[in-house]
Each structure stands twice: as C-alpha cells, then as structure tokens.
Amino acid sequence: MRSTSTLLLLLSLLGCKDKGADSAAPVSARGAAPAAQPPAPALRRLTRSQYDNAVSDLFGDGLVLPAKLEPDAEVEGLLSVGAATNAVSAYGVELYEDAAFLIAEQVFSDAERWGALVPCTPEADDDADCAAAFAESIGQAAWRRPLDADEVDTIAGVIASIGAAAGDFNTGAMYGLAAVLQSPSFLYRVEHGSTDGDLRPLTDWELASRLSFLLWNSVPDAELLDAAAAGELATAAGLEAQARRMLADPHASDGVRNLFDEIFHLYELDGISKDPAVFTHASPDLIDSAREETLRLMEWLVLEEDADFRDLMTSRDTFVDRRLAALYGVAAPVEGGFGLVTLSPEDGRRGLLGHASFLMLEAHAASSSATLRGIFIRDKLLCQTIPAPPADVDTSIPEADASSPTLRERLQTHLEDPTCASCHQLTDLVGLGLENFDGIGRWRDIENGATIDPSGTIDGTDFADAWSLGEAVSNHDAYGPCLTEHLYQYATGHPVAEGEEDLVDWLALGFSENSHSLQELMVDVIVSDGFRNTGAIQ
Image 1 (tube, rainbow, N blue to C red):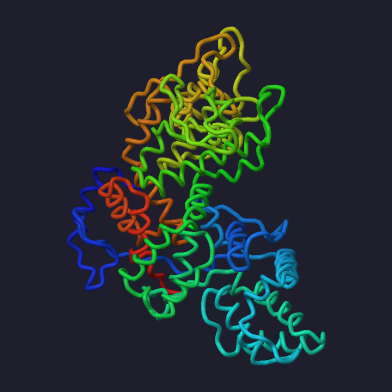
Image 2 (image 1 turned 90 degrees about the vertical axis):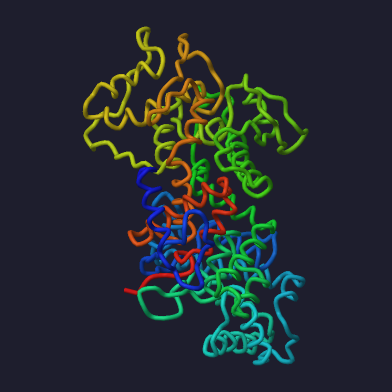
C-alpha cells in the first residue's frame, strides 16, 4: 500500500472522476469512487468451511460431514483466494463423490429432511414430472442459479431411470441428489459475468452467490435467490439492501468468524503442539478455547457493537471460559461456557495482541518467538512484506546463559549480523514488546531470573510494553488500509490487481471516514464496481 500522505493526495485527485449515473458506491468527502478494472474471472472451489456450511444450510444440522475432502490452499494469506488457484486431483474427485453419497444417503434416510426437499408426491417410480420438479428445486438451491432445460432433463433422467430400476422413486431421487452435490456447479463458484468486454457485470445470480459467501460463508437463502430472480441485485441500491439485511441475520456470525479465521490464520491452531514439559498448562481444550475467544470477540465487536475496528487492538473486553480465565489469572465470568469479562489494566493484557490464540500460534513448541509475533504484526495487521531468510542463513539463536538470560539479549546475534539485521530489526524489535507473554500466552515478568524489557519502537512510535504496542498498532497509518485490502481480496477471491489499487485506497479512506466500522466497509466493498464486475475472460 502507498504511504498515507501519497494516498490522501491521490484520493483527493481521484474524487473528480465521473463514474456515471449508477455509481457503485455513495459519494462522500473522499469524492466518487475511482474506476476499477478487475482481473479475468476464475472458478473458485468451495473451501472446506463453505462446503460444510452449504450442506448444513441446504439439509439441516446434524448430518455426519465427510471426514476428508480436497485440502484448501492459501494465496495472499487467504484460503478464499487460494480457492481460485487449485485443481482437483483424481483422488479429490473420488472424495467429492463419496461425500455426495454420504450426504444423500443420510438425507434419504430421514423422512423429515427428505419430505422438506421433494416438492411433489411421485405417482410412479419413474414419475418424470416429479423428478423434473425435484431437479429444478434442489438444483437452484445447491447451484445458486436456475437450471437450464438440458440440466433438468439430465438429472430428472437419472432419477426416473434409477427409480424405475429400483422400484422406488426416492432411491432415484437420492442418486439425483448425489449427482447435484458432486457437480462442478455445486463445488465451484461460477462468476463470469453477463456480457463480453473488459468489464463484465456479474449476473444477479452470481452476485447473490458472491454476496452470500462473503457475509454468511454459505449458500444464498430463499429471499436472496428471490431477489436475484426479480433482478433486484443489478443496482447498487438493491445489493446494499440485501447486504444490510444479511448483516442483521444470525448467519452473519459465520461470515465474520470465517473472515478472521482466515486473516489471522486461526485455523492453523488445529495443528500446533506445545512441549508439555515446558508448558504444563497447554492442552487441546486450551487451544480450542483460545481460538473461540478471538472469534467471539470479532463477532461482538463487528456485529453487536459495530465498534471502531481499532478497538480490536485496545479493548479490555473479551470472552473467556474457565480454562482461559485460569490462564489469564481472572475470575471466570460464568460457570459454564464463555462469558464477557473486562480485564484490569494491572493485568497488562488487552486486545488481540493479548489473546492466547495469537500468542500460542506465533510461538515455538517450547518457547515464545519475537520474530514470529513481529512478522504477524507486520504482515497480517499492517500488510508489510517481510522477505524470507536466505536458504543458507542460520536462523537459530543461542541458548540462554548468565550473560544473555532473556530473548532480547539472545536476539542480538541476528540484530548485529548484516545478513539478518535488515529484517530482524523490523520484526524482532516489535515482537519483543510481547515477551511478557510466554509461548501459550501466560503472563511473566521474569525470564531465566532476569527482568523482561518489553519496550520498543514501531515505525517511529515508541512503546513501553504490550499494552502500548497495541495502541501503536491501532493508530498506525497502515492498519485500516491493511484490513481493507484483506477484506477486498477475501470478497473478490483474487489479489488486488493494478487496475483495482485506486479503488482499494478509496475504500480505505471511507473506512476511516465511517469511524472504522467494518459493517460499513463491507457494504462499501459490496456496492463497489470491483465487487459487482469481473474482467475480460482471457
């Protein structure tokens, strides 16, 4: 991202651009939105969380979901961007086929679920009309668009022929459902636009799908599909109306949780381990609780409070259960489950940088890591790129001894080596501000008998400890623009292209103008030309 001074100057100039009658975003003090040129469209495979949510929303909760599917991959730090880059392996095709039948068989065996899906009463084992009605109904819900005549005929043919052979219409319908669920039209998000040209407006159906996966991380509901059928999503006003309705719906919690699960890489907590000889409090349930704390705080700040997003770095409010309360040294607010607690300034802990989820994830199995924590702040919160170390560089640090008991002293090796110093000065001198937290997020004042010094500086701002480091990050010029960039990439499924940079900068300025409300930023992104269009097909 550009420097703030350059960004503000550029945005003031861009405010004079004319976007035409149906401006994709409201005009404000920042001026009209600059033109955007998105890249060519790409098929996005459903991520694992989207697949699971789609199945639950289509057929109801309580189904046994497949244990294994084609794995997700990360691009630009996001699984939702990586979803546009991965092909499905031959083994992955088999996994999706097995998953489709696993789900269809469970739905078929539950009379209530099945009855809610089939919109007619078959009059014969091969009832073609009922088969077509079922194909149209389940196809539109699962594929997020109406089926054409050939698609209906193909699925209805499967249902009727197998129903006749089995002597049971429902058996045929089960195979028809399995066919729908292993189709690329279910597994992939098709967003190719409605017309040829360099800027291709997405269809109402494509917009419904893009909107729903952004805000709910799942398939559109009936009301959104009805709006698409009525052509109501073709205008910015119609799209905004649906976006605000969806943000007020309980499903929005799934969208917010997944957004930050990806941005902060909280899903990686599933695979971490801690040395039990060093961290005797570490356990799988503590790791699960830590992840849940952060996700609950995100839901609360974004959806319930509609708070200034900078509060994420400085809020003393958080959600803990008894397990986390013990780690933090506070009283559990409720007997069972999670409850809201306000941390005391004397605890030295506040905001995301005091969460056990982040502190565990950005640490080693047997120790903390100023480098990993500094990289997280630079990369995930400020969008500053830190180069990978050269392949032949020794990244180890000395063991603690009487002359260098704390990590700050032991890291001097890297800070004094010209090969390492350029990067480690950016990361370690920030991450050392969190050294009062060990590798699982437990507070400590002493390391190996020596008092920890958590002071430092970040891009010209001095901080004394973790408490003031959080405030320094919240006030950093790059903090708001970085979140804007993450959200835009998550929403569109691709890295910011050169033709979109001005729009993303403009959106970042709007985020600041709107008191850093993430809800308003989401709406701003949704009604922008970058969200509503795609580029020319190559």
